[in-house]
Length: 196
Image (cartoon, rainbow, N blue to C red; front, side, top):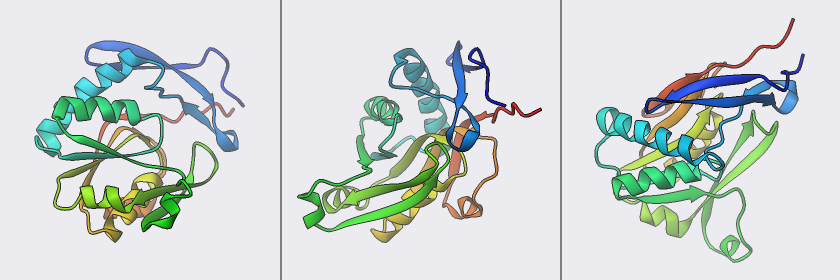
């Protein structure tokens, strides 16, 4: 059974309540849609709360925030601004020029898009991370496969990072998620069940 058009989920960030829509995901599953790009107030309040959590539980000195190319880029940019650090985005494709230079890639099965996704790290971005305190940020971790793919890419260039998701979706995780050096999340996101 598909979610009804009025299905929503309420979440609180920084003492403000936001209503998130529940939509049909790939493969017929229901997903709570987290959109930091089109809701700047949600993004700001999530960034404020995430920043407090990061500085208290992970590190109060981050040099670089790494994020996959997704709707999380605005949140990563806001957190980087708050912490005086840089953002590196792992892109989903490379330009013809970038393909002529060394790069590393990771592939994972996306729960959101129901297909294989690719992430690429170019040599210049890899060099920027050498000897730096790196935080990998994702908006929603469902199975953990995105974070695992990023970990594998960073491991290929000898970069150790902490891993942080704003939402940890309450679903079955890939067993390799337990092998990450560290994994933190701010809030749990339920998986709506509309089956009868």
